[in-house]
Length: 243
Image (cartoon, rainbow, N blue to C red; front, side, top):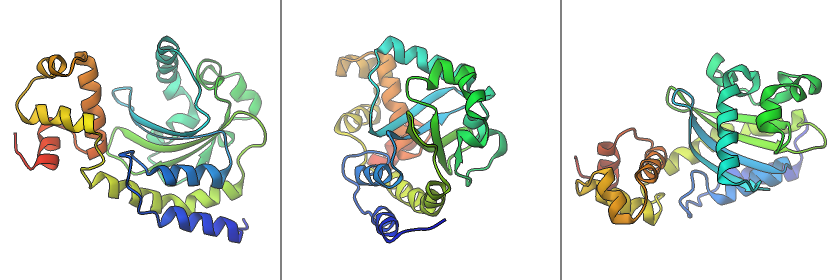
């Protein structure tokens, strides 16, 4: 693998970022830098709870595919329906290997992938050229950066090598964000303030004019951003209050 001066400058810019504005899991400048460095249609940074079969958050850069809520729900069902039978998707769960940068080509020939249920029911709208980098996360959760290409050439050893070098820096940047409480949006802080005041989910939903499932989803996102697993821990971390 040959690393050009341009590649090195781009990697250093990503690795040395101190931008924590915007409240996203990874700074926008990092996502944009990865998008440009690798050259793809879309970069997605996401965390999934593979035991509960839910996506905790996702952050995208590049082409974003527009789907209706009904289509999104069906895609989500298809993803989890085939997740554990898709070698490329469940590889980190099954092996515990979070350091190897993988591509779908590591597990399938093009012919095999195009015939698979995961491709036909989930991947087809976004394309089948995929490369995945995982970061350490708590048991039962997978934290990954996924690069997509709808068509064209597969990802190369150059791409894999650059991401392998960047992986520890991405983990450090992500962890630095988790250690700060100002990554919450104004709406999330407002909701967590109501939790700190002792309100139930039903009461919060009424106060904010949203549904109770939406409250639960907000709390899941808050827990993920703060890297905690309970209301008490979230309130304590943000407000210094034990509840």
